[in-house]
Structure formats: C-alpha cells, structure tokens
Image 1 (tube, one colour):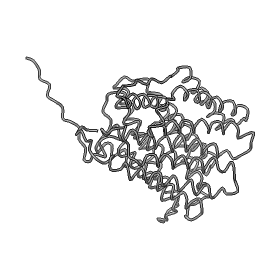
Image 2 (cartoon, rainbow, N blue to C red; image 1 turned 90 degrees about the horizontal axis):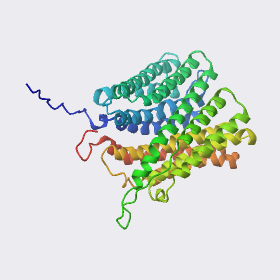
Image 3 (tube, rainbow, N blue to C red; image 1 turned 180 degrees about the horizontal axis):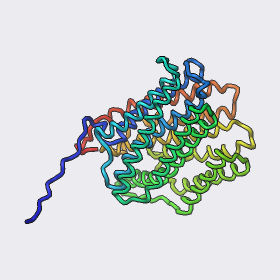
Image 4 (cartoon, rainbow, N blue to C red; image 1 turned 90 degrees about the vertical axis):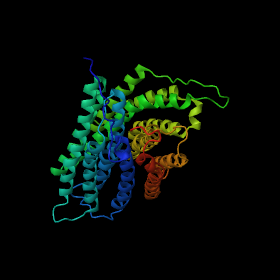
Length: 417
C-alpha cells in the first residue's frame, strides 16, 4: 500500500515575540542597554551601594556590556541565523522562553548587586545566583546550536560553537575571580569575553555585510533599470584578518609588548580597511541600514589604529578599548538589529523607520564623545563621559520606540517567524 504523509502541525507560540529568538532577545537587549547604562551612570558617580571590595565597579560595567547586552544580541542573531544556515528549526515558544528567562535572571542578579540591594546575605550572593543562570543560558544556547549544526551537517559552523565555549570560559573566569577575590582573574574574564565578541563580529560581519550591501543595492534605480551590485571578497584577506586579530588578542590580553601590539593591531586595521574598500559602493550613502554598518566597521578599523598608537602616545588604553566596543558592539549591533528586525518579520528593508538616521547618529556621537574628544581635551573628561552615556540611552530609547512594536507583532504575511 502507498503510505500517505500527513502534513505536520505548523509551529506556534503563545506570543509572536517568542516565534524566533531575535524578537525576544533584541527587545530585551535594547531595554537592558538603557537600564544598565543608566545604572552605570549612578555607579560611576558613586550613587549606589555596590560593594567595590567584592567587584571593581568598572568590571561590573564591563561584564554586563559583554555578557549581558552583547551576548543577548549574539543569542538573538545566532539562534535565528543557524535556522537559515542549517534548515533545522531552532527553539521557539516555551523552549525559547526558558533560554531567555535564564538570561533575564542572571541580569537581575547583576543589577541587584550594582544597586547594593541587601536581603540579609552577602552582596556576592547575587552574583552566585547570576552565575548559575548565566551558565544555563549559554549552555542551553550552545546545545541548541550544536544540535542544529549536527543535524544539518553544517560542520563548518563548529567554529561559532568553539567561540561560545570560550565565552563560557571567560564568564567562568569572571565569577571565579569574584569568588576567590582575585580581581586580575575577573579582569581577564571580562577582556576575554570582549575580544571573543569582537572576533564574532568580525566573522559574522564578513558574512553578512557584503550580503546586505548586495541585497540592499541590487534594486531598480530611478530609471527603472535593475542594477546588480557585487562586492569584492578575498580568502587571503579573511585569513590575514583572522591571524592578525588572534595575535592582537593574545598579545594585548596575555603578553603586553608594545612592538608586537602595534604590528598586530595595525595588521587588523589595514586588512579590514582594504576589505572595506572592496565593499564600498556609492549607493551605500543613501541607505541608513547600510551606511551604519559600514561606519561601524570603519570605527573598528580606527580603534585598532588607536590600539597601535597608544603605547607610543601614552593615552589611556581604555580609549582604544571603548572605541572598539562602541563601534564593534554598540553601532554594529544596533545597525544589525534595525535591519534583521525588518527582514525577518516580513517587512521591507528599503523603508526603515524614519528614526534610524537619528539612532545611528546618536551612536556615532557616543564614539566621538567617549573616544575622540578625550584625546583632544582630557580636562573635561567627565563631561564627555556624561554626553556619551546620554547619547547611548537616547539611541536605545529611539530603537525601542521604533522597533518594539515590530518585534512583538505577527508578520504581515501571516507566516510564522
């Protein structure tokens, strides 16, 4: 007898925001970016009861920017993109909610510690609670990706899993440093996570930015003639960028040597400047969802140059680090979220909300105020920090006002996603 394959039940979730991971993690990440930066402004000026003997407030801020905000956006992107790469359905509905709740509870633990909330236990108890949920969050995310990669036989994606495992190691070092009262270990964990995120951004940016440029510009022009845009890529550039960045990362974190740091940082900058030249097209200037990504990548190149010059010009190492963080994590993630949130909800990427230009402009202002102005005038450092913090919060307030409704609403075409 001939067997009849009955159609499988279509996926469904209790709310549209749990259809795919980018919806809930982009939404929560943007809200968290506002809360954690506002709280950092209070911690920075000494207006909370954070226990600095347990954890240096700077590392509290660094940890939550890397393992809180950035890793949420990485989770939203990867748990969505892996479905496209492998064809395997990723967690949605209550399974996705479980992963998200682990992230959320870890963040609440760190916020409670930053505020210095007293519940009759040592303040470090908040961080022990956060550690459990942080490990559950990354572990469940890595398992979902591994399962999809294995089922889809996309073994080339194992490199992303390796980075997630190293991020887990970095986060573990942060917590172990706190437990053992070893601030150096905590610092190593924060910086390890930061450079791994930057490595992920360079890897993913190499994949998606050329694709976005080609898709965003290969449309009919004013005369109705379709123009096909193809940008240049090079395997040699990919390898050179990877090798220079790996050397830079190891040298800056574990083996500080100004000669080797300068050579490796300049190597990363030059390779990626050449790469950007191959990606450039004049039409980018008319597309905010493209010029924002292009400027973010350019800001990373400028930041690597700042790393190269820092040992010789003597300005603070955090200037270069914040330049890389603001361009490679701040502007890059906002620009990526603005584009992905439209495309994956069935909306046109060619007609983004009118606020995107202001959003991206505010993040550029963050870079100018936090990185460039202190180089020119360090006497008003606190003013520049305050302006940067305000511009960061304003950027994400605009993102939330423009995109939360989109992220929480069903697709206009009625499809699941």
